[in-house]
Length: 370
Image (tube, rainbow, N blue to C red; front, side, top):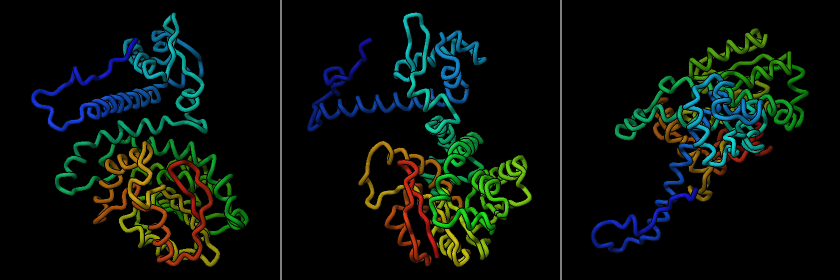
């Protein structure tokens, strides 16, 4: 089927055109239609992930809409429209008999939720963050923020799944071993803390890998702390991990062998104060492992799909939550670019700020020492 296109003849506004560049207008309108289409496709992907449609196609192979509905326990009419939407976007293929298939690339990215390339969690963020749009609009008008508890449970569940899928593959086998002497230090034992620990996945993994550690996790969100305690109990390490909603900028004490901040420093109401407290909490040979978002030293210097996505997430989540936490000017997801981050770390007293790796296009992992 030929795709419809916008034309200047069809869309010519009434009255004199003035200085309006109609070709530029048509190009933008065509792009905007594409962006709206992409937004719809992402929501379809969120449905496919949550309802098990992608997983079934990846596991059991091609199916008609009716077969896929029966295999997954969903309603055929909904499944048919969903499949047509994603076949139109070339995420699915459709043969002459009406059987839909998930090609190898989409299968790896969307069909295996425990695989190394899974991206379904990114799709889940869109409906979860859109649910607070009215609250964000109020924030635009009044400067008010949104507390984490005002976001839907699906947002936290998505983050928990993302962390479980990612951290098990990288925390101990890649990140810890990349720091000279850290594996040996943790094997001997010591005390470890994590700020904004979420559901505690990182600390649970460390407790399992290093039985002599004592660990504490801080998170301001009660639903995260409840989940972390339950997960630690299920893993059999609850006796060595304490979880707290206390502010780590005030509660962290000294003698720590390792402190973790995994893509969360920008969430602190006062990142500089938290960095100072972390610095002061480390023992003489202690390590601070910091995963930071790749912000831009010059705003829009790296303008493109990644930066626009991150700024959008920040607008809906990180700025509102920062304002609710009491920050006068929240950093936002992109607000700690490398130059500023290095300066804040040095001002906090860190003598070593070493880039270890870039685990993803979005993040950089740093090793810091006092």
